[in-house]
Length: 484
Image: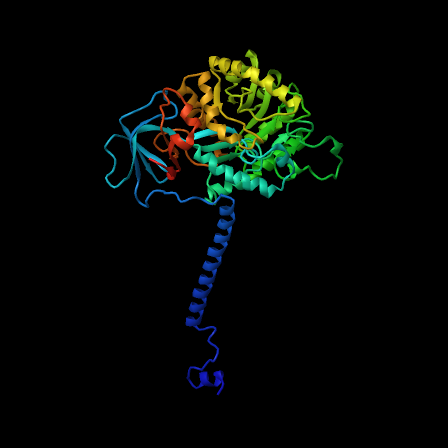
């Protein structure tokens, strides 16, 4: 009897194939789910195994117990802006943010308590001039090595940066988008990154790292290695500047970096040169403003600083050779001065080339005056290091901050790397990649909190030795180090 005949007689047919039966379909769904789960576990294990082999796998860290806030008590704290240490308060962290600053001993009973033992608590530190993918490799490696190696070194360095207490960096040039994504998704540990993407440079500018034997560049020629890998982008004329600016914004830049004058690490552009015409700079600034963000500019000399400010640049990077007129113009335009303690000392980026070394010494001579007069004129100043293509040099990051006490009181110096730096980051507006205040201990701010052995009212030398003096690192409410 066929199935159709059985149905005409009112009987259920016998179907030897049960593929369409509900029980079979349910079993298949369970099997597929199990296979998918096993593939995911296997794939994840393979990825984490790759990172672990290079020292990049996230370490065992403790976040908040689900449903329970964390209470930091028995502490003195610097809030990022007020230049005095505050006492008699506890810090309540909940859902990755600082939920409240409470009178000591009044926190919720169900909170998970961290006793700071009377130590100093500060906001997470911010480095406003960092190159996450270029900091810990040599210039030769940066210009020639496989980009996969460069990224793996950057991932390893990101974890070390976080454990030095720098919970946020503004990346001022380089292919940091992938590293940022890996950190945000907790594939690797590291600081929050405000990425600029490729540094925009004119031909012959500070971001043009081509060898002379590659000139001239003809239509149809392949881009240089640094352009292909996202380190720099060459642009000449307003249309090209607009194109390259918009490309970085499309990739996720929180701000755009242009090379507006000569530099130290590049061999072919004298430090006194002006780079990019004013209309080219203005094109970049307008394109960034259309996206609700801004342009920062590498520049040292006074005339070029003034050109940048006229064009709408909002952050001057370096600027150690600025004269009084340029410094006052920065203040009047409300621009930020992202400045570094370039002192040509043992922590300086190594320069063996005589031309580069001479430029480095010239900048160092202007550093003391720049800090002194910039503060006297009331310019908004934020801290950065610009440790660049210097293997091992990143370990000086905290020491660089401590050097600011040569020019100002310790808490004022600390403010430059916390509250003031967070204010600079806020210029990214809607392009800021993280929703919440940074560099402060305040209600509603992202819970980036450090506990130190040391008194920041007295000095900042302890920040230069984080291995022994940094007792707790919390980023977004998650504890990455705790030796209390």
